[in-house]
Image (cartoon, rainbow, N blue to C red; front, side):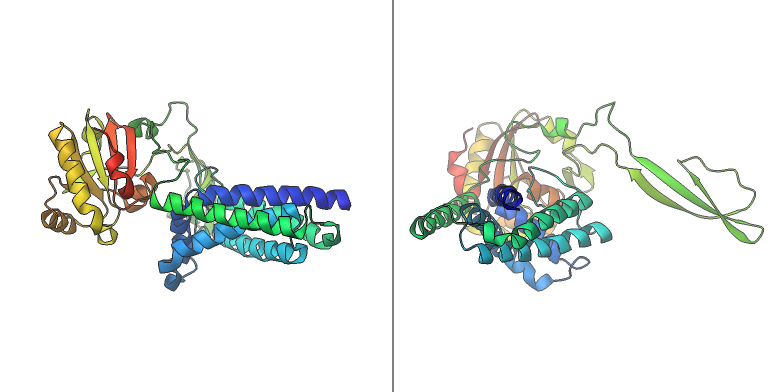
Length: 364
């Protein structure tokens, strides 16, 4: 039992630390995932949505600290029971998402590792088993260091988590796992290889034959049945290839400018997924930067999910010398974790990304 507890201790502790650090690298992204869980139609807890970012920071720091607690053997009963409570809660969320197909990615490992809902649930079940082993064999969990050294390590760990979190919140994630990272070409990311797996569907055709229902299952072809067609139920039995960049468009007044913009030799994108929630205090600096870019031959565009009217009114108020185009809000949140932010591109390849606190670091 001692060896099984030791293995479980290392496995659970390391996994919690890795999972927590990946999310700590991008707490804004995890907060978007929490908002998705809180939204109507999922858990229907909209009153938590304004606190999603604060909750995401607390959850990921606690996740990292509990992993460290377990590895160094700090307060075993408190640590193991806390881990059990956390994993039971996450197991409920992942089962709910998988069974009701509500949230397609739990965000357990941020954008670094994408898991399907059932894969996330399976992962939580495995963790639950190992944590139960720890609970049963809790007497075998002994502190590695003295109480004073344990408290010192925990203080350093907490301070490190807070400082790291503060840095990424006021700038951008240190490690960008998304398909819009610096060096990525957006057009290439939307390409589907010729040999990419295709989605496979199963069709259950229902007919009325001699007064009774008859169901014929095919892989797509319309069946030859001597009866009255009623309806057909389509089920995806194998998911096809999905390019890393999808739902990316640049539209204005119903016209798609995506290809034209991604062909620009010198392009600056001002990203603001929701203009009503933008940090207006930085718009003076934003105007200075975009005016400089225009003077140096760059085409500058704004990209937002807000209405055209809001974009025009904001542009007029701040004397912005560019127009806003429409792009899906989720896509804009994925591109960059700042509202507003600036991207510099060359023929669709991202050369620079800047949080609004780092506009002065951009080079044209």
